[in-house]
Length: 254
Image (cartoon, rainbow, N blue to C red):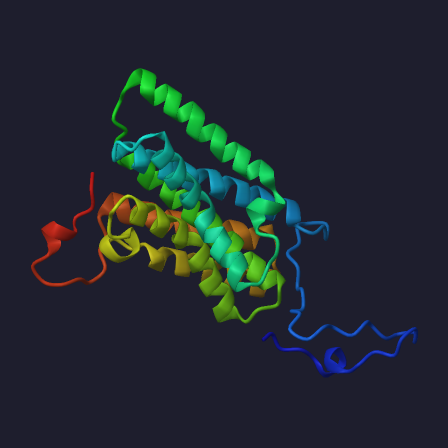
């Protein structure tokens, strides 16, 4: 439970001047994310959430089509990839309604991506390469890691909880995508840094937020560190330690 000051825990006198209303038990204090000029950055968080949702939806769509699923399977994988991380974040932070229920336009946008993408691929019949999925996954992880850490920060959660919320939001959609595609999730299989990038990006957000305040710079820092680390790891084939003798087995799909 977030730490509260003695003044916040003390009951307020109804109608007494200078006293704030008492906070309900379990309700976190809100620190707020601000942009230059002191405006709340709810619009920025929403924009990041939309971009992350579409990026993960694209990664799920590409992976499902590479598995030659029918349109029902493609839609299922796309939706789980798009909404899995944010839904788990909302569950853990006790946010209701879920973000995609509150903003039903997200659902329509993902549905449009599935229908248009399916029609185009069905007509052209190409087999999508792996790299667009990897790039979309990296950008989606960066966007969702920053937004997950930012939302936990807004609710007044401790730093380690904010970092873990960033990781959960950033990687769980990819976990759902890989499970539905009958693959060991990349977070466990791909020895190139994955969750490590999300964790580092969440701490980058917290570091900038601690120095400059939770301004838009903190969100950008989290996105750039997470997505940048993942893309560099893919380009340079960086690897975390694994079991001896399994380098070939652990080499990701191309």
